[in-house]
Amino acid sequence: VAKQVIRDDNQKFHAIFTTRIPMNGNVDFSLLASSPAIFQEEIQREVDIRTVVVGDKVFSISIEQIGGKTGDVDYRDGKGKDLVYKPHRLPENIEKAAVRLVRAFGLEYSAMDFILGKDGIYYFLESNPCGAWVFVQNGGNYPIAECLAKLLS
Image (tube, rainbow, N blue to C red; front, side, top):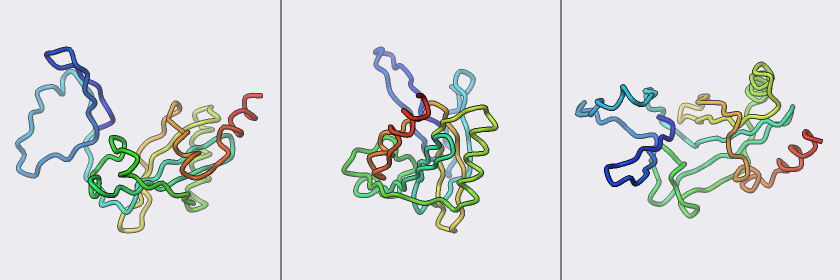
């Protein structure tokens, strides 16, 4: 489930991140009618990958969850101390496919999420044309801002 924001009875907002559904099946699905959801089999991950495509350039980082986040299913609610970012190189065929996908949508930019499974397979999760990129730039020491500025000039 992608991050959703809900308001409780006290009018306080809460984010809902990807969560595991318990195997016992005791899940309250009563709110599904008012909020879209995506269900998928859990992929046993080695690391998460955030990839940013700018024109024909591809920048990727791996995101390892450590400390209290070890084994969690969603890195996005982690704090800096619980996440390790490292430059990552996707296989060339996946990088080329990422650029083709962005272009197929008539775009020059998109942020993509992958999981590198423990089985060595890269699993594509999503492409977000408004996705965050600064943490990729900082985590990989990449010139993403420079590439975006050049693209826009």
